Image (cartoon, rainbow over all chains, first blue to last red):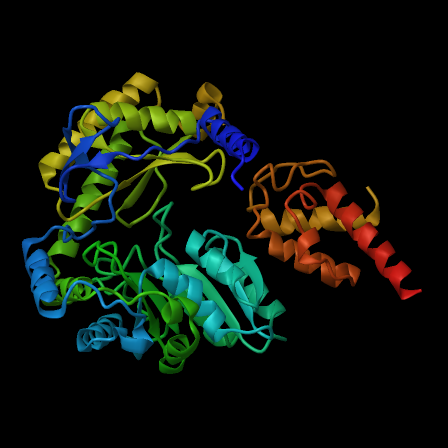
Length: 414
Length: 89
């Protein structure tokens, strides 16, 4: 029963979160996703047009007219929803078509769609690994991977972030297990750095281990033709399991997949719980995703533009004196360390017409709060210049330009 | 620091501190609440303890609180060893 006492306890917990400066508030967006969006914040405030620097709309396709048109055709031709999980009556021919297209794009043997990559990560490990096996994960893998590993009965271990020496020690330690699986993000979502997939694959082949990569922040734009981190590192065809999302660069609606070795994907089809028990990806999304693959399959123009914008943005922020995490991806974290400072800077940037969000515990580790800026192929040079000017003004206001972690923490606390 | 606590401390330093990190870890340094070990990477420490001390730590006892300092970890190990010895008699 939700008694007054129970209610009061939860209210106290929420007050604690707010007092610690960790409360998250949603902003209401009153337009399609894009480089410019219309935002109402706080609720009831006048709607304001701002530049969006925090979406996963990396290729600018979330509101692309051709994607929208294809989705609309899919809606008309195949209906709104399937009201079914895949294996009962939820598989249309277009689902298989999308899976085959993704297999070709990613360079794997087979692909299985899931309602989201979160669901793919929740289901994949339990479906393919058992008690006699071991999962060895990079310590900064995405939260959905941590959750998926916890659902699996295989043994677990971790290695220091991107530390190949430490990974090798772990692979040596676990030679007594039936199977080993090295688990990593392709692009790490909070820091924006790329996994050393070439070195991971070399170690995995030497020590007889499978390799799993969640490439959600890479599919569509990392690598010369946008196939992902494995293309960038020259190891296409040597990754055993790739999970990725349709909810970022590939249209931004929803949906995810497991792609990889034929037998592993088939095991997911037979055993992965989110696949067995959650609704199929709606036909409208499948149709939109097929059009996205058409668009990015015939030209690298969008990913090339994104790469150039990323270089421009990153060098602009560095010249201003912001403390950035090193990296090559369009995720560019501006390090602020203190949670309240991150929120204050985000608030002031919003006042200047720039929409970003402060990231702090538990999304990132305590003491490592940041503003995670993200570039999109939808950004034009004027968006980036306006963003840099705003960051400059706000940086001066808070006295953080030219300052590193030590000075910022001294001024604002950890 | 006794042999068990020293072994735990030395493992934490090797397993969790990056090269160049010169933080001092003593028996009371907060490991989990101090952000040195998180609940995800704690599994490596649990495995080390089980192998080194030849015990099994039930999942419900392997809590962030029980693993927050070298002292508390050693106390947990000693408690499990004692319970195991009693059960064996």
